[in-house]
Length: 418
Figure (cartoon, rainbow, N blue to C red):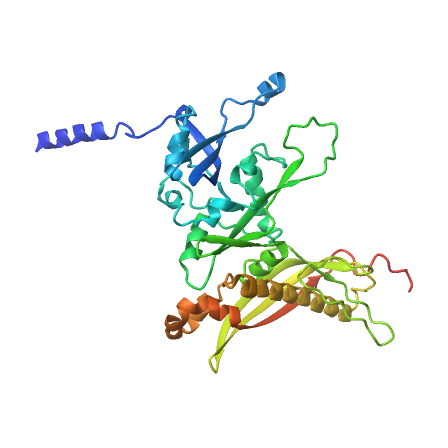
């Protein structure tokens, strides 16, 4: 018995001496952003890799160097493209810290699920990595641009995506959220977009580096039918989708300022199409800051007809009041609440109409609501849900409650004593 115990300790000491597949840090190429494109029906992988030898001192003394390097590989699939990089780059890629995947438009139009199996199968890959579509171009065309204060371009991209909480004109879909949406019948996926845009140069004293005249924008979203990219939504339509899906946690609502009542009559605000219309001559626009939002969706069947219903309860604070309206008066606060609610309603109706008539697919998730409420009926119609959705009636109700007016309760253009 004693010999058996000693032998067991000896075997365990051999097995626990270290990790058999361990890799040293100086052998790894740590990726932060990966771009996926199609080139001649092959997958082109572009990886942003941390440069461990870079230092600020060496950059200032030699004028050369960068925090990151960019490497590319081509293959019949993603994994083969990863291995192709090893024949050109002196380190193997480690994706354990990868935070963003940028999909070229051609790559996304071919269908994602059949191409991105590796992203879910690899044990190193974070499921919380964001997915973005390079709107109108290739993934590698938007990589390497840094118009922020972050030293790493990957951090710049990550931060502007996470600013969703301040401005929901985008979406912050990650790998695990995308695959959940894909497998849910009655709900098609939307993910974020990223686009390179030229910007005006302000500081002419800064030496041009080739990228300082550009910035990245994540405004809008990409629509998928099953797993195929079919189109895009602009920022306002994306915000409306986020409202319906109860994802609004902040941001602002901009709307025409209602005219103050004069001699027993008042001029109603001009009609708007969308949450933030183009400003017309003599039209003042005010804004409400979203403090809290709650959205409830419902589906009703009446005599075989389906009605989709959404009710939104919003609490907000006045962010800016432009126009001749005294917010110290309760009736004027009510007018502002009604104008804000109408702007949200009009914006959602516009996005809903686009989803119904232009794309013909449910990107809001009403199919999930129908499934929960009418499970037996859902079995019969689930294959035809998108067609049913495109013909269904829609009802929207928004109630806005302005609970704060800021530091002042009278407009700054009001003449004292009048």
